[in-house]
Length: 545
Image (cartoon, rainbow, N blue to C red; front, side, top):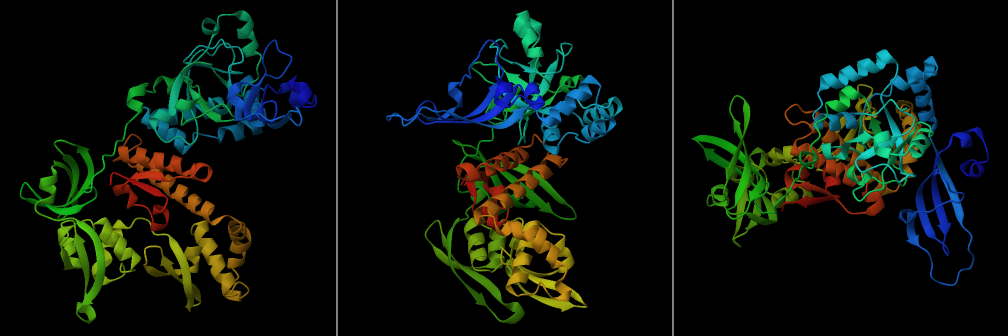
């Protein structure tokens, strides 16, 4: 049947699964998913799980069914892998295959599941020596035999000799719970010779999941069988060293809401003075908070304390909002003062140095006011810059020539400005190049001799970006920023892939990839919220406040 659908080509002879879109308003509705070869049928069977929009209940205008085939499997890459497994691949195919090592994401998930760097390095060395990787990306399909038991899978094309465990995950994968270990179903599990032989007739390239009450795909970053690719690794040395503990992998990160979270204050503990900041509320009744203390002497030392609300406030009041500001004094002695409304309903003028003494971390209301009124560049407000997070280029306001080199006056989203050389700008992110291209076009500068270097930027990088929706570009910037935060935290020796902060960055990154399709925002606690740029914060739902 598949051969007839695909036109009896050589590719059709090897095809065992197709990704389809189904349109039949009067008979089925609208559906999508994977169809796989099934023994003993002569008609296409459409499972209920494929139907995404129910059929119309009105009088049908027609009963036609339109089936659109979007992908054919196994893919050409899997066919090359099959040649390598059979030992009849060319040297060029082997070399290309061996360059596809484990991605950073997969490595971090494996580390989170207990694997060491040495084992990963040994696996890569063995792969190079043997001329074959024991991993690949496979299309997920449902079991056409209904014989594969729960907790098992069947990877087609590996041969009857392979009966070990396999590690599976699905992109984007950022934490231990995004990956799992399943057993390759063998004769003992499938029971009948007929169905066992049928599954072994499939070419390499599919991972077949059982039909059961607790399906495996949703456990891997909410995967499904509508066309998702799954990363599979079946190397015995690697998989046997994975720590299998589902309860430990599902690390809960609960954020209790409280107005004290991220409040900075001066803490005296054991006769030592610390800059304290409230990271998280640990429990209620009695209340308890996790506080990070920084002791500044010759070296910066971080310590952590568990304190009550009364111990943190110690007679202080909380800032409700900032009403206004003014400058006191003249010239270099001028000081910024803020009119603050406190939680006790009192109002008072407070200088920025006084606010810094009261709160080592600026209260959110103070930070928002300073940023909204572009006060960050003032001398006594600069201490708050380190709490702004990554700055994002907002616009280029002017340019100048210094010793024959172009410098650009850049304004960032936090309000600060800086002169940046053209050379540095050319090596920046493509979003920065987009702003550079717009500036050159607006001022008709791209034709000048000294601006000739910008032409390639405009033609190759900027033009396609200008066609993007503004929101889509914003979400792209957000996702890249969150990915970098996750990747840096996962590789940080002091944190690592199982650290709570790493997990939170990873979950926020995965949420950002769904905004374009489903809307919404990403979730971050307040202490991480301050580590990203102002431009990105509009897409963040702050938890814990």
